[in-house]
Amino acid sequence: MRFCVAIDGPAASGKGTIARALARHFGFGHLDTGLLYRATGRRVLDGLTPVEAARALRPEDLSRDDLRTAEVGQAASRVAAVPEVRSALLDFQRAFAARDGGAVLDGRDIGTVICPDAEVKLFVTASDEIRARRRMEELAAASQIIAFDDMLADLRARDRRDAGRATAPMRAADDAVTLDTTEMDIATATDAAVAQVAQALTRR
Ligand code: C5P
Image (cartoon, rainbow, N blue to C red):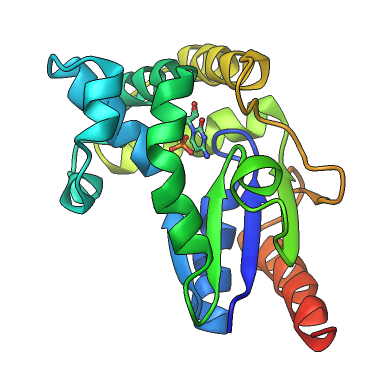
């Protein structure tokens, strides 16, 4: 069975947590597409050009343990604005979306470019302040201490670049359901997403 759930939204909106929970709940595969751009950005910091880095990406690069830093997030967002980088990563994402047994992909352009025919499209968002606080706590748990104001500025700079680029900018697909998680805890947000997917599955 092919069944694609496309989840987009800005950094630290909760989309990754929701994507993982949906994949677990329904037994679907999950691809965090941000990791593709982070792994590419990481290799650019190591000295490759963006296009070389994207073309040379191997599956094992996605499990590097140094991809979650703010520095790599910014590098990812810079390489993500390069059209040749995006096209080098397209086939892998589309093949994953078409896998048998169902797939959840989260990123910035999943509902608009990667899986425009996805059975479910969610756009997950939250206020800038709550996103900065969540990301700050996440990084602190990994012993990376960042001040709130710096975190807020970092997220806003990344969002501006992601939403403003010419190729595949971050935006909600016209037929996406928006989930604002500002006032929601994880369980409430996940339940809302599970309900959307369950409803789409009954329509098949
Ligand atoms: O989701 P995450 O914060 O890990 O993504 C890192 C960066 O990768 C984003 O800021 C964005 O520039 C880029 N990205 C993208 N398209 C995607 C996923 C991520 O441009 N589908």
